[in-house]
Length: 182
Image (cartoon, rainbow, N blue to C red; front, side, top):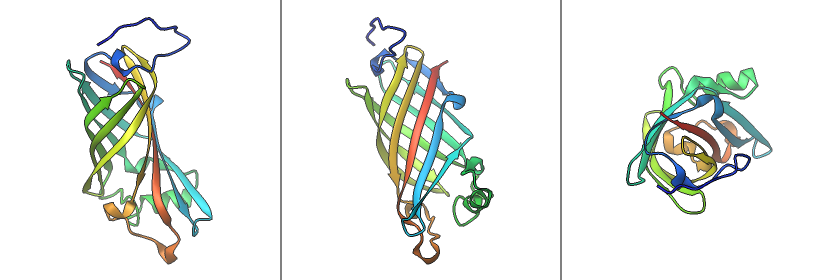
């Protein structure tokens, strides 16, 4: 681990500044949002999950792994009828699957303030591999904020409802996760 002085007004983006050991997600400063084209590509549906939890660990060798858990019933689009439909068996089936989970099996940082994140995403009881790039937007010895965006094919997880072909393309998931050292 390298140490350097930073101006408090300018947070570091060096992932090598992170402390080893256990980390916990600060859910109040984290978000998971989704957007998807609907109405045959004419409208974009946006929603956010409001209940998240997570933890991770950075080893002495710099290796990292962790878990992010999202409560499916916490999805909010600010449209009550849509929220009810998203919670139904047509989409997230919150009665049967109250959470979905991303397990990061590896996080490899580079010197540019980004990290390649590899792991497994479990949605509706189906697990698929997932890899994406996260950007460090703020790093200190005891906190880090990582942001990333990934495209998900909902059909890969058995979420095939598509009345009259209204839903087009992939779902974009945008993550902003803030972790603090325990």
